[in-house]
Image (cartoon, helix red, strand yellow):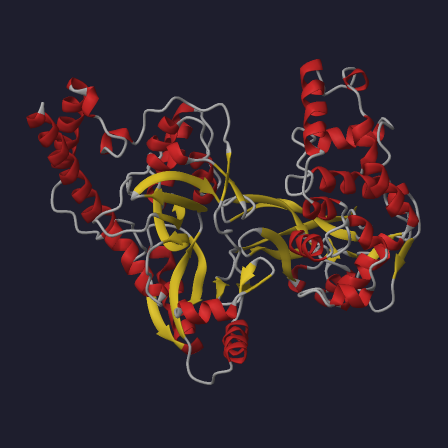
Length: 576
């Protein structure tokens, strides 16, 4: 038996070495046929001696039964978002903010890397072995995708070497190469299966499969770009050196990463990668600059949900031309009327676009946009479609866009506060649109997280008169719901259970769920931490609110106005 154990371990070590050479160093030493022969030999030996199978064996990447759902995992250190930059002046200002904050005049050293268009993940290793893997999620909680991550061949199941931390979080981006994307869609076309609009959607869909066998068949790739929590291990003071350490442990790191000096170096890097963009094997939508000195990173700290020491410099979005057919006005949860362009459908960067934001009437006037115009649209940041400009040479038989005098939902007068761009419905929660959007926000995952209460159900409940405020949700009974169009008895019972479960929440989530103007998750959590009692918010002054870091006079006024109103106090008391 000892002989077989030694033989199996030798094969594992040899296969892991070939994986490291192939995925990390990009320097394979054997052809694919030889790698396959070694893998099959190991698999056959393990099948003959199952008692010798180890969880970190290359053969154990896939084989778990499909899960019924994804559990949640809390990141030890939150996975933050990045602020975006779209032109050179943004980067010059970014560099200046760093120098001002650090109170230095000398050049800043930046570590630059391509911004992959994929899915951010967090991997936790304990005593050198992969313990769990999670999606970014809301930055604090992600979905448990451990088995699917194990299916990616370039992910080390065990760290190389002997010197590594007791526990460490490794951050990376899962993506699908263009070649693999084309292959998946080609096969789907032949079989009548689902095709994907772009490689990012395909990567996200592949990683969130409940069956790891499906994930394994998609041939996903991953590059690692940083660390989160780390225990009992000295790390270098340079981000670039941290990446070099990750490579030594067996993690693939993007070969395009480069160290540069000051913003000039950043802009040169941007142009170099932009010129290489179409030749790369994978999709990118920009580049990322990070202050290389980790001590400087710590001194710079964070603002809201983004670090001050990093920024994403986005590439110009892909643009297309189409016709503006009409404009609708949507009413949001704070009553703001937002003009939305209805377009002749056109494919932009792999996505069929038929709607685009027009932002506000000032923007429409500035760009001189009229119904019937031919316009250039782009997906700003490669995500949100927007109208960039009008093609005036093609203008014929157009008419101007006008803000309605009455709310398109409730007929209440539309008002505009002097000095503000926004027009608002004056109907408040008597406006069905504001009520519907407010309830949707209240029930959303980052707020009260009422699982199963989707948009259509909210609209139906309001239309049927079952709910006239968010508090009415908690008076619903199964007997009221079973006769509705979209709800069978089991679904109704599940929804009531979800409502009951949502009653146990945090103060920060509860404040965020109330939908106070300009109060996002970060501000809500700041209020919870610094005020600590919902009732104290009823009387807190604007001055006291402004004494809290990152809360300015405008947000302080919105908070004070909201909590001082008796109707809101009564609603909160009822919810409590």
